[in-house]
Image (cartoon, rainbow over all chains, first blue to last red; front, side):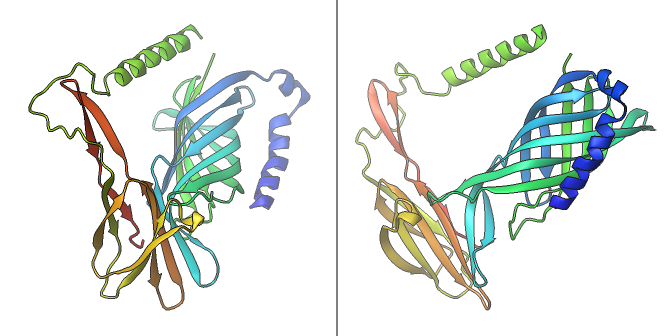
Length: 183
Length: 136
């Protein structure tokens, strides 16, 4: 997973920098997202994020806070013989970076591919104990489609690999996000 | 930017209005309302387990499980059991023995008492507490 992240950083350096003139032409605007969900059939996270979007070079970086809006029973393997089952409250604080590329028309909407990562710490606590979830540093690669409804609003839908170490929740999730680019 | 400020202000007003109406006011009076004027000292704790014919051992802790203040041990022979316990925080662990592993399910909460005013009397309410240690 770390290799993937490093690969993304290396490729994004190339993608983001392009030509020196492009950097000068960078058009940085604030961006905000309050309706982002990462989910599968077993789990759901709701995310809020704010950051910057370079609308010229089509990349963005955001500070992201996401959480599971309910307490979920989870199982964590303690050793070969013991599995602990908790009711968990969990938060994920991360730096998100993504790059949009290519333009094509899909159902009458300007559409692009996007690829990126969320990198940060997964924190949490459990009901019935004061012991907290062990903070875990994770990188979650993601990729998918970005529908540009207008210059200021886009909707991203894609795949995210969210490896949170739970026995009973698969790592593969869908990510949906409505993003506002502020003027 | 002006529009964001306006949206923020409207949201703030909406929350303030909603919060101001979510508690019963002191001048409310309904003589038909059941009013228990004595505060409770104990309440029911319901413990739910996954029962499939074998007894499920449980440990009930006072406070949090990691404080290790064990109140009692029991074995449940049904899907749930109820215990009448003093108002406090409790945690319960249920042990499920399987062929290759043991699953230890934990849950915990505090028995909560609330009060409201009715016809100038303070009335107490107690919510049953359910601790769900059913196996996934």
